Image 1 (cartoon, rainbow, N blue to C red):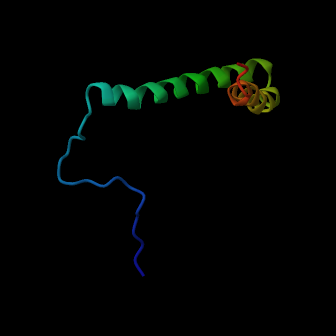
Image 2 (image 1 turned 30 degrees about the vertical axis):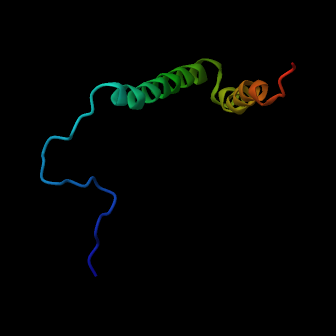
Length: 75
């Protein structure tokens, strides 16, 4: 029986990956950059105030931030 890796990148003969420029690249890279910044901030915050507090505060902050848009609008 032979093992085969299926999780590696697929190459199609071109050694250099194709790069996307312009608005499409911005739409892809901006959220990833923000996510990386929040990971760094969360790790630093966990070092300062404690990992348990940050772990508990994460879902609370997410819940509080997502509640107002779900409330009915008053006209």
